[in-house]
Image (cartoon, rainbow, N blue to C red; front, side):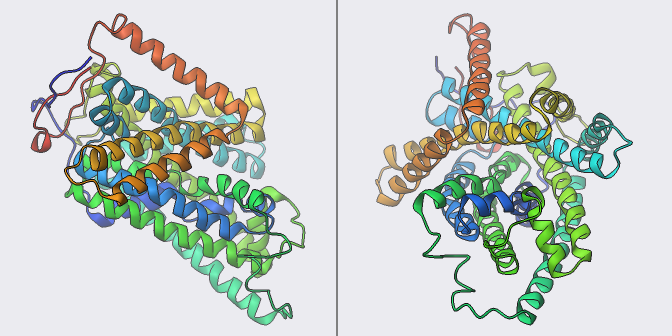
Length: 464
């Protein structure tokens, strides 16, 4: 299975309209500056009070993969992201499997955001059934993404501004609270980072495996490579997004631990951060709660946008039905069919998963499935970066060996630490994809996929 590769020039193409700032804002929305607030209580518990340290360790771990993504996006500025990188550098069949795993990640992400938003508003307005809220949010995500890439960028900027204001208000309130309340303990300001009485490597690793959730979504920046004015901006956008959001997240949980020390129990571990915000200034309880819903709306919308680009690239290459997934809406030049498909899949999963596994378990299982698909994709991208920038390079530099190898190993450890249920369901998903690939190629006798790149950077045509 192999052969030359390239791209047909006919038909509409994705519009190159995004600046470096647009890419950074999009990445920040996907990751969300408020992400650690949603699981702050559990993270504090797992890390034995070292939530901020776990966030920082997770940032360093994800930075390795972020660099690999950015470098591969420069080599292949394609909407296919990991699907294209792995298929071109390793093997087309492996690229197909990687793309299939990322489809799981990108579809589950907006799905769990629909679940979270619907559950929260169902609690506030119990007379409206959960499924009705799910329909509303799935329709909202889809409607925003159908407006076009520049409209999506403007909405992203507005949502990022609103969330930034709420985060700033929390920092001001937390600083005032700490300043006016006595704290005689000499280690008061250092214990959130390192408390010798509570420190354990096992606890830190457990917390780090959860803290990685705060960074899930940075990879979706690479899906916009074909819509970036300069594809080389994907690398700095990816790295800057991880660093800025990582430091901001660490500061958020550090401030929260100063306000609410580990020695004090939370009224409800699932809403721990809103309790902290309410302690600093009572009106912040509702403001932060509302902002968390807004954060999930922003993240779900942004991830649906990235999912549609991945499905479009796989459809364009023939990995998925080309007439449906490989089509672009001519006027706005967006993969409208893929956008609608992701919206429908998110709605179906948001209704079925909580019904099957229970509301709380459904959200947790969805988050684990998201990590299942993402981490497989991350391992594939690190492997592709190793082959391109070290193994096949004219000059083999140690840095080009260490970064992707360490990134691969970190992702492998995190993947293995996922729950058994997530590995079983994820394994079934992967098996279905492999069976579909075998059927499509009539037992590997036919073409599986072509890896199409923008005409300006595609020197040859690649297929399997």
